Every structure is written in structure tokens, then in C-alpha cells.
Image 1 (cartoon, one colour):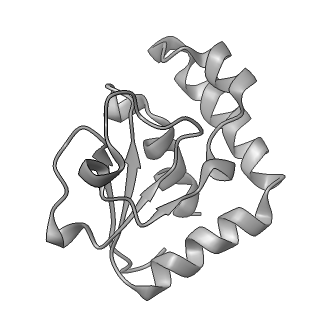
Image 2 (cartoon, rainbow, N blue to C red):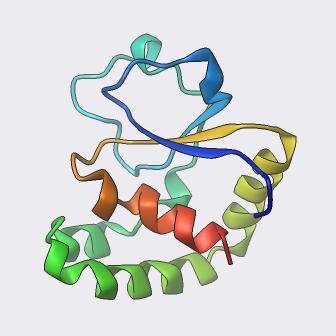
Length: 117
């Protein structure tokens, strides 16, 4: 990923000018957040973990490593959407926007790690 600027931010946190392009990476729109307040530039539903994987994971930290493996496997099956995200990253700063409370064990953190490879 090099020197590309990639930030993570919860959908419930206010947008900032320094966010650059704001890309929502959840399959479901964050509950209670209006489209105006979210200030989303692009919604990449297809890059989110599958509904089955999301339900299995249930944001249980003890499943984090297995979640990452399964999510990366799903991402390998969607090269076109990963390529689209990488293209956006080459343009300038990108903020991955998501709804999960636990940032450290979120799909956004897993995706950031995946993009480093």
C-alpha cells in the first residue's frame, strides 16, 4: 500500500475534511445515521463480509483470527471490488467508514490489513 493514506472511522463519528474520500464498507447502512450526516462518497457493499460470515463472527474477539482468514478468502473471490478500492486509494486519502463499535476487531481493520499485502 506504500504511502497511501487510509483511515478508519465509525459512521457515527463526524466527517472531517481530512477524511478524503469516505467509503462505506458495510453491507447494511449504519442504523440511525442519515445519508447527509454520513457524508459517504461511495458505498462498496460488495467488499463487506458476507451475511453468513458476519453472523458467524458476531464481533466476538475470540473469533477474530478465524474471521480474518475467512474474510480474506471472500475478498480473494471478489478481485474486481478490491481493485476498485485500490484504485480509489491511488487517488488520495480514503477513509473506510463502518458501523461496528469495536474498531480493533472490525471488518474495516481486517480490510486495512488485507490491503497492506
